[in-house]
Length: 500
Image 1 (tube, rainbow, N blue to C red):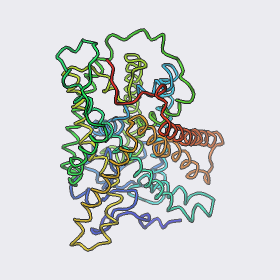
Image 2: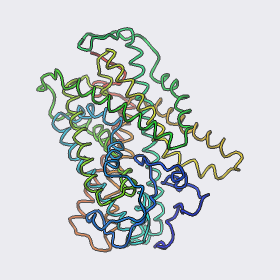
Image 3: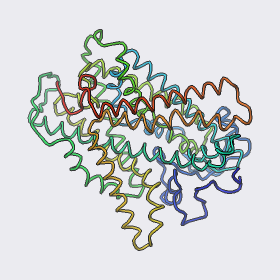
Image 4: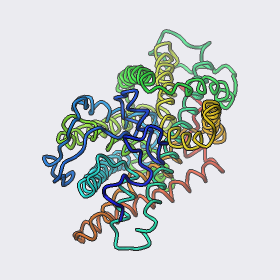
């Protein structure tokens, strides 16, 4: 068992100014020096410390903090929680519902939303348990898993507990870089469509006429064209500057969503020809897309630990995730009802070719472009500092920039290799999001409380959730790879063809 008076393996001590960023966490020293207050996409150690008697998520009144005078309010925390869960995955949910069925799809989204929130609560509860037990100021996701393994009766798991932190860090890297791959495909598809339809774009947004697309570059060439601008964007390492871009991105995406909603609620055709449940072979693709959209578990602990009054967090979590779930279900159902079998991998690709909706595509693309830098910051802070520490200070800045260029190029190359937005989302969701959101938290609860006595029904519940997550992980990844190798155009629409 780890010494409770020492920071966990790999943690950054507050009094160590030159400590390298740990695996699975961000550079605490850098974040503090910049006084960055947006933790929706980062893991940050708060300045306060919990007192004795912190018994977990089920008893928030026991959770207090010392010295957190500059913590976030409940409103700010709610906004950050919404931001951390709403992104490009939302726009792909109408196609996900098509892959599940007009009845089975929304019901599955509701169940997945409930399970995802429950797993978030498990993670917070276990983190509180170990903070109280070892008198820790803060535990991130990886730290909670590491201590959970140390609490198990198995000597083998206790010996290799550090691998819990490393595995979580690996999946966080895969998830965040996967987001970046999705952004490349999204930007290329939307920009290509705007350029292709430029000659036929009108001011008449009520027209349903077919627009003849002008031949243009392949979407992969658009990705290469965007690459230099993304590289320059990731050279910005100051989180205060990135927070400004993040705010602009949020405003742009909010305006875009309002315009999209007002369009899809009009002229909904007869839905009776839509299947209540789709073919079982396409359901794994639905799972991957849906869990990709719901994967916001990484933002929970940083947000809860940065609040002025953490006792309010349980209510904020349930209210925020209720809003997210309602938004997901409403947009996915209305989008599928509005466009039917013509629905594409991003609902923006189904909007009419008039200047208003072309502007919406560009506006959302603008928001996604700047969001790339925020999402990229997490894996960059995990991967780059340990490597830079191996070279002299003279060459450190150059190695830093070269590594950033290399990581961005990797995401671009992966996006080029899989230029299907729906498949990229499904793959990322199935591989990494399912592990972080569904598989790890229930197993963490068993590891944390098994030695202290855990009801058999709780164990059965946790095993069931983890098994479902694992099945989704395996089957979703397999189906996405099969679709990638031998695409079934009749089953899932491609993302680069638009018919109005």
